[in-house]
Image 1 (spheres, helix red, strand yellow):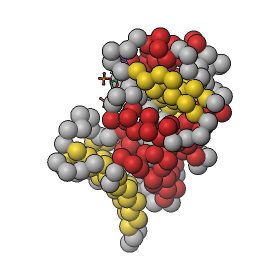
Image 2: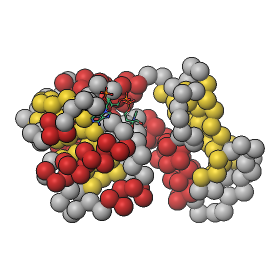
Image 3: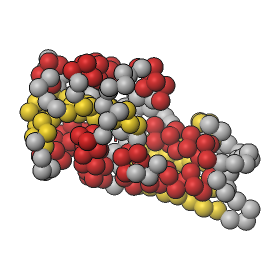
Image 4: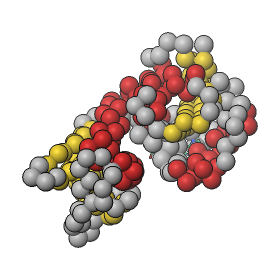
Length: 233
Ligand SMILES: NC(=O)c1ccc[n+]([C@@H]2O[C@H](COP(=O)([O-])OP(=O)(O)OC[C@H]3O[C@@H](n4cnc5c(N)ncnc54)[C@H](OP(=O)(O)O)[C@@H]3O)[C@@H](O)[C@H]2O)c1
């Protein structure tokens, strides 16, 4: 039996993670922490899942690594630069998952494949009006994957107000009834390829959460991204 502490267990994502862990054989939740908890409550678990805020997440990762615990981090803000700056020891077992959606992860992978052959790409991403950041972390990651994959220099015009990430124009739309949607459009010579992904329910995270928990319980070292967990990359 793998014992689990969920830090941020009362939040929107934390509540979902508690539900997923409770449905998994071989895992038992022994601690549920929120903003009123002392972080020492997580110390008795084999595996710590962090879904809080970035500043809290740094303290959780530090504590879990020094305790020798396995850690799964779903909290936003862990950019490649932030993970590198952390200089985690070689003994650390930490898995960072910026996006638990299997469909979104696969769509980004397919976008990188198309970019190898059709370099001109733009991204439209749509989220709820209350989303504080723009462009979304997922669209930034997709733009970086496209830029890394393409062999030819793009000639993609941007629209006024676009964000330019790794040379890819991104238009951010904010609508009252949206959850999360991304459309990547590649324009070739007389042809267009579109790769779309829409989240219609947060239940879409369930399978990615379960896969990431199983991976964290069994894999050594530092891992970043659901694509690594799923064996896509
Ligand atoms: N990886 C993904 O796919 C994905 C998807 C969605 C969201 N996220 C990210 O996951 C994080 C959580 O999102 P959310 O929507 O669940 O946020 P939320 O609803 O605001 O929940 C935040 C949780 O963190 C807890 N918390 C705050 N300060 C704490 C502290 N000092 N010690 C322990 N717990 C503390 C809160 O406890 P209280 O209830 O006491 O305030 C609450 O349980 C965010 O960074 C978000 O961007 C990632």
